Image 1: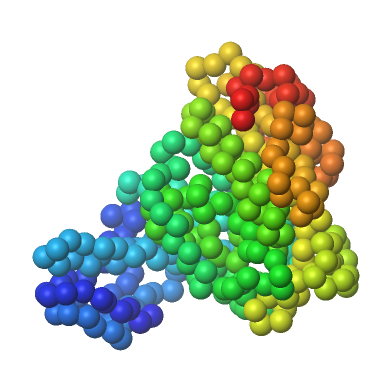
Image 2: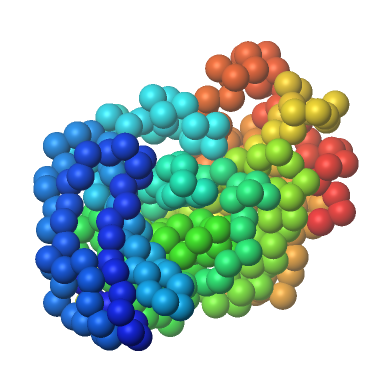
Length: 352
């Protein structure tokens, strides 16, 4: 891989591994210099282990430092080996062995600790993720900026034939984040991952920048009132989208190189709130769901108290078992009560 340094004066370039005790598996053709340089070569060994691994390139000069984080996927970057029940992360919906979808995830570094960024369930035929799931709380929200790193390529799906190329708006639709950029401004590396095209769907502009964006803002408010909020963002895909009408909801759009990408018919969000010291809900948890038709006319609207539904109701609509690891945390009985509870009657969600 080629590395370009843009700097003034003398500088040094080093590699830091995460965790720090990891054996060196990469090297640089040049580790010091003066002024801007290009064509520095970063060489790396194959990763024969299952999990991904991370390094940071650290540039230092008299005026300060900068870093860029790189993730090298493991031997099994995608597939059913890392299933939702195996991972046991609280935000995960179910995965199945026979639905043709792929479970994958990305990791990020926060204060020197490697943790999950977001997980997703990817459809290599329709070129969208059916859901994206991630944890959210005060420490993960951060206060950084948006990177607009549209040119990034998802390392879990490097083959352009099985992922969309969305480095510019496509076919009259916006590139709608499923894990919002604003939910991952803890650092640039974490934010850049949210711009992978596997985290995007073709989304109506009025819908994306209207009701959907306003609800994303609400979810961040909920996260700040929680120890942790576990979030699932999903889309509903017509099985025959790619044979449908071009440019129509329920049909398909075309990416920047002409591949067909399904335009979802609806979107949903499911959130599971955890707070250690609370009498709200059951076992510290309560849940809330929202299901919205992908309707541009909703752009001027906002999600209201009458729009929210229980997790059970949402599961009935989408046909997916959400938060499959909750029963293991608090037991089957309490988990059933959490999913059946009507969020319209739970004060923690209000006011929006």
